[in-house]
Image 1 (cartoon, rainbow, N blue to C red):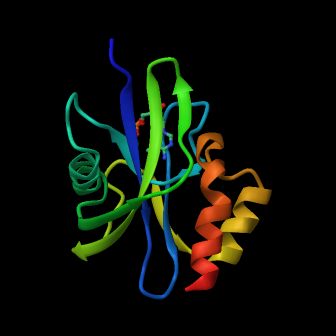
Image 2 (cartoon, rainbow, N blue to C red):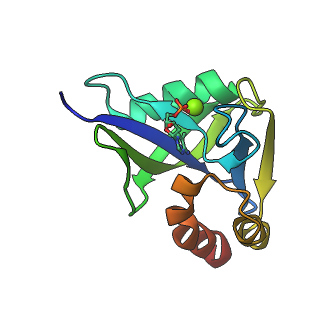
Length: 135
Ligand code: 9L3
Ligand code: MG
C-alpha cells in the first residue's frame, strides 16, 4: 500500500499573520489549533489537494506556494507535509473547525509554549515564526 499524504496549509496574510484553525475532533486533539488541511486523494497533486481541502474547510480559494522543510510521519502509512498558501478569493470561515484565528509570530510562540497547537504541527514553528518575523 502506498503511503497517504496529509497536506496542511501555512496560510499567511499580507500583514504577516498565520491562519490557525481549532480542531473539533478527535477527542485527543479537540480544542487544539492546527494548520488546516486533510488527506490527499490517491495520485492527487499535493497543491491541488490543498486547494480542495481549504475550499472545503475554509470556503476560500488559495494560491499554493513552496513546501515547508519538515515532514512528519503520523503513522506507518500517513505522512504530513505543509505548503505555504495565500488567500486569493473569499474570507475564511470555520466550516469544519470550531474557530479560526490570525496570529502574529509572537502569538504563535505563546500558543506553542502553552501547548495549544496539535503536537504534529509544532515541527514547523521555527520556520513559521521565522518567516512571519522576517517579512
Ligand atoms: N493532521 C495533523 N496536522 C494537521 C492536519 C491538517 C492534519 N495540520 C492529522 C490529523 C489526522 C490526519 O492528519 O490524524 C488527517 O487530517 P484530517 O483529515 O482529520 O484533517
Ligand atoms: Mg482537516
